[in-house]
Each structure stands twice: as C-alpha cells, then as structure tokens.
Image 1 (cartoon, rainbow, N blue to C red):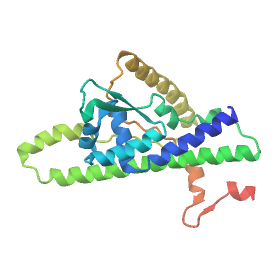
Image 2: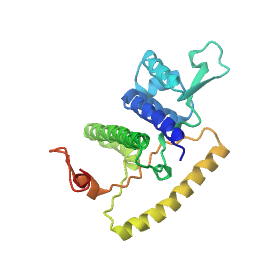
Image 3: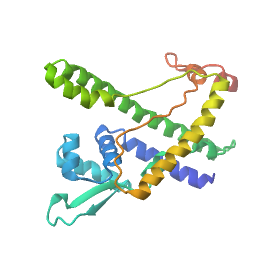
Length: 238
C-alpha cells in the first residue's frame, strides 16, 4: 500500500474516531447510519437534546466532511434541511491492515503506531456501545418491574425480541483456519446484500450492528495491565 495514502487515511480515521468518543456525536452518527436522512427536529427527538446542542455537534462533523445536508421543498421551515453521512463515511472507519506492508524505517514505525492508535480508538467506541447496552438493560429491568401484567405483554413483545444476541468460541489453530475461511465468504455475501439494497433504495433503514471481533488471547494476556509490563515477546526485543 502506498505510504502517503496510508498515512493520510490513517490520520483521517484517527480524527473521525476521536470525534466519535463524544457520546452525543456517536448517537448522532448512529442515528444517521440507521435512518440515512434525518431532520434537525427528528435528531433532537431521537437524542433528547436541544436543537442548539445538535447543531453544535453537526457543525463539528461537517468541518471534517463527515456529513452533508440537502433541502426539501418545505420552504422556510427549519426542517427543510435534512442531514446524512457523507457517501464514503464507513470507508473512513474501515482499515485493511493486511494490505499495509512495513519495513524498519522510521516512517513505517509511525504508520504502525497510527494503525495501533486507530484500533485502540475504535475499541474505545465499542466500549462506549457496550456501556450503553448495560445501561439499556438496567433501564429495561427497572422498568419491567413496575409494569402491570397487561402492560408487560406489550413491553415483552417490543423489547424481548430485540435483546442483544452474542456468541463466543475459544478456538484452536484448526478452528481459527476454519473461522477465517468461513468469515471471508460470509463477509462477501453480506457485502453483496448491502450493495444490492443500496441499488434498490437509497433509504434502507439499518437498525442492527453486528460486531465480528477476533481476540488473540495469548498475546493480550502477555501484557500485565497491573504492572504495565509486556511479557515474553517484547522482553525478547529489548
């Protein structure tokens, strides 16, 4: 991969991810990912924030070229303007590290540091999402205990079918090879579905996020977070 291209795009990704560490901006971006085009009033209602607050954060996102606005025919209305994410927004978040080749030069070290910073910031955002999921569950538990039996059935129908689903496996080398083979095929099939949906309609609502994360556990546990020391691998390099 061209080093200038790598550095330029990595820096942009890092800027975008740092902006998304703000919960309000993250919720704005998620709303735009789900609904595609949203008015200021709709965003204010979804987020429970004042329009002035939303406008402030939209200005920050706009300065980095992450959103664009178009006008409807409703003249004179504040909601004549609707917002959407820039067409290549998701590309700004996605990094194909397998296409980056590194040598021992100082420039390549800078690229490697940016790759790791990019990953770290991305996981910080995922951490925010998991924290929100915990608060969501706490809210549901608290709310469900107050319902009368008749109302609880409606609550159950609305929320129980959309609770967060998850799977996890501990894999051997053979399992990892099988996983990588299947996930590559699965990703291609999902990308084809998304592409086809985009061809059929520009306003597809996507209210679900699927996280596919591969944890190299042995490498992770070699870092002692209490002592803030690396074991084995990094010690061998010293």
